[in-house]
Length: 316
Image (cartoon, rainbow, N blue to C red; front, side, top):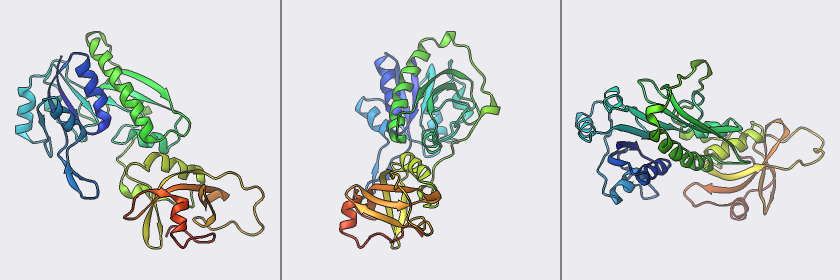
């Protein structure tokens, strides 16, 4: 088939690669514009743009595809049999969805209708789900509400982060996409049940702020879900302290007499990390941190270069 591929981040690349390996022709790649990245904030192309350029595939990067007539004309001129959308990052107008003979297919990283929206993988981990998966839908005018063509589920692995789960789902979605295109004339569409729908809105930077009043298990899920993107942090002496990794602390046995330590209080420091008091009488072991303006390091190394000890409190 002749395809226009819409996608931006690295999670879209397995589908892009699988289409080419299966013998399909990607006539045009549509990606997000270059964005500042890294400490130098240099303009950096999206992963899909870089991949397409390496293979001599034309690309366009409309800042806002809705209303961009030049971009829409390039897409029409590519004469696709089908549009494929994987983590593109913009809402595509109706005029694009329906003009190819096989319309537009989307690889979505959840078991729709659960987790419609921009951040399904992160919300899956954040909410402690036992299962996730990939759904291939035919796009319509509403966010992730199109008819289902194929769906495949996977169980989450113990302590699987959002980044690790996304990589697994990207590979699974690539295989499912190629298989779906291979039998697209024979697939029966399944309408989504709106009563089962849940939402996965975009994660903001501020959503990564820890509340030490939460139980350690909830803090652990937030770190596994958000530490890589957009980042998880607390505040120490007026500066952000990124939490890169950790886990709920082991049971400490009988608590000392008196009231529980205030959430956010450092309970102990050792080579394993910083043990922090959390809500509901629990504790969280911070293993690796990223001080503001510095690279990631072990929490123990951070403690050696900082005046921090038991009784000091993190957070605001």
